[in-house]
Image (tube, rainbow, N blue to C red; front, side, top):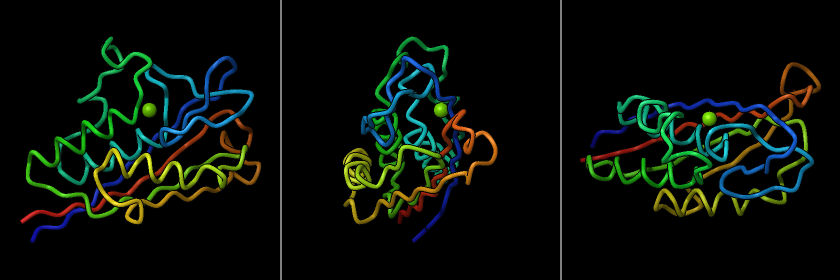
Length: 159
Ligand code: MG
C-alpha cells in the first residue's frame, strides 16, 4: 500500500460585484472573490493538494486561467475532474483536511454543506472531509478583508 500526502494553498481578492463561493457553497456577503473561474479558493486549494499528493503538478498546469473552458467555471468541477484523474491512476482519496482563512463572515453555518459538496466531488464520505476556519485577527490581507485564503492537505492511497 502506497500512501502519500499533498498540500494546497490559494488566495483570492475580495471585490464588490462578485459572489462569495467557498467549497461549492454560496455564502451571503457584500463582496465576493475575484478570479477567472468562480474563484472558489477552497476548491482550488483542495485541487492543488490532490495534484500534489499524486505528483501531478499543479492547478495552473491542468486548468490554465487563460483557458476559456474554465472562465466562470464551477470550481467543484475542478475537484471532481482531479479526483477522477487520480482514480484513473489507481489512487483513492483517503481524507482531505482544510482551513479557510477569512475575517468575516463566519462560515460555521455552511460548514456541513461545504463538506458534503466537496465529499460528493471527491467520491468519499463527508466524514473524510474536514473544513476548519480561522481569522487573521485583524492582521494582514486576511485581517483587512482584502482577500480570503485556504489551505488543504490531501491523503491518498493505492495498491
Ligand atoms: Mg485560485
